[in-house]
Image (tube, rainbow, N blue to C red; front, side, top):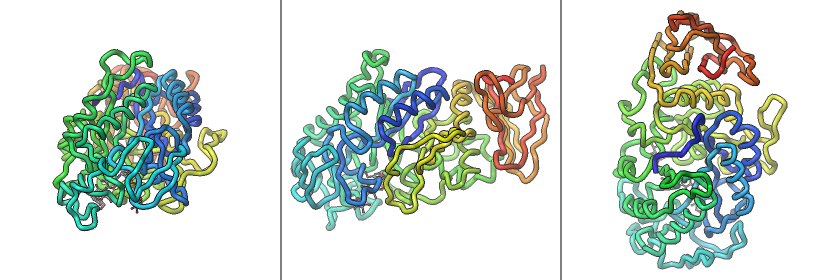
Length: 471
Ligand code: AAO
C-alpha cells in the first residue's frame, strides 16, 4: 500500500483539483501521458451535499457512495480511468470516509439522493444514527474542541461534520465496498481525507481488507491499492504521522514548510529528508502546497503557491529532482475568496500550452512540465556531485541527470562535475526538448564529466539536463 504502481519512465502525481472527468481524460491523452507524468489525484468522486454558493469544500461532505458529482457521473469516471490508464497515467481518488455532511438540515445530494442530517439518515448507503460516533464523544459541543486530546480528535465532529464510527463492522463494510468499487474501475489508490480523525487500528483493518487491484485493468497479481493518508503533523499534538506509517504513506506537511522557511538557504539542503525531522523517504507523499493551505484552510501560510511562480518553479524542480517521497504537484484555479468553487467552464488550452478560463494549470508551466521526464530518468539513482556556494546548488542523480539552481543575485558561472557521460544536453528549463529538437540552451559535458554551467539570475534561475534530452 506504499507503492503507487507508476508505469516505468513516469514520475509525479498531479492534483487536478475540481477538474471534470472528461477534461482529465483529455489531459491524460494530450498532455500528461506524452510528458511522462505518472498519475492524477482526482477530487472526491462520490455524491456530496449541495451548498448554495457551491464552494469547493462541498465535495468534502458526502451524502452517499453513489459516483455522481459536478466532476461527472459513474460512466464518465470509468471512461476517464480507462483512457488515462491506456496512456500510462494512474488515477488516485481523494476519498472522504471519516464523516458524512455537516450536521443539520435535509436535502438532496449531487446524485439526487435524499438525506436528513438532523437524524443522521443517509438512505442510499444506508447509514443511520447508530453508525455515528456521537455516543463516543464527550465534549459539550459534540465537536472537536482541543487537538491536544486524541480521543476527541477521533471521536468528535470535525467542524460539525457527522462523524462515522469506523469501529463498527457495518461501517467498515460500507467503506470497504466503496473503495473496492473504485478499484474495480481501475483506480490505483487513494488520498484518504482526515485520517487524523480516525483510529489507526480501524484504518488498518479497512485497508487490509481491500481487494487487490484488478488484473483485468492491467495491474499485476497481488497489487495492493496505493494509500496516502492525510495527517497534518507539524508537531505539538498527541496525534502524529508516525502512528499511521505502518498502514500506508502519509502526507508530509513539514516538507512544504521546510522548503518555504529555507527558501533562501539552498546550501543547507544537502541532507534534506529524514534528518530534517521528516518521516522516512518510503513513507512520505510530498508537495509544496495543497488545496487547503493554498487558501488558508488546514493551516495555510508559510507555503509556496502559484502566487509566487519564481519559487514554485524552483522548488518544484528541487522536489522532482531530490529522492525523497512521492511528489505531488498542485494544479489550481484562480480564486478571489477562499470559498469560491471552480470556474464554470472547463480549462481551455492557449497556443503556448498554458490554460485559460480561470485555470492556473501549474503542471503545464514549461519549467514544471519538463520535470516529469527528468525525474523519471533520475529514479533509482543516488544524489552525487553535490556542490553548493551560498544560495547556489547543483547535484547529479548518478550519471543520468543534473540540476543547478541559482538564487544569488549574480550569474552562476562554474565549471562543474555533472556525473554525466560526455555529450551535448538540452536544458529543459530554458526551453523544451520536443521531436528530438532542443529549444533551450545546450550544455556540453566533456570526457571527464565536467561542463561549463551558466545559470543567469533571472526569472528562471535553474538548469536541468538528463540523458534522454540531447541537443
Ligand atoms: C465547511 C465549513 C465549516 C462547516 C462545515 C460543516 O467551512 O464552517 O462547519 O463545512 O458544515 C473542507 C474545508 C472545511 C469545510 C469542509 C466540509 O476545509 O472548511 O467545512 O471541507 O465542507 C483539520 C483536519 C484536516 C482537514 C483540515 C481542513 O485535521 O483533516 O482541518 N483537511 C481535510 C481536507 C479539507 C476538508 C476536510 C478535511 C474535511 O483536506 O479540505 O475540509 O473533509 C490544526 C490541526 C489540523 C487541522 C487544522 C484545522 O492545524 O493540526 O489537523 O486540520 O488545525 O485548521 C498551524 C499548525 C497546524 C494547525 C494549523 C491551523 O499551521 O501548525 O497544525 O496551524 O491551526
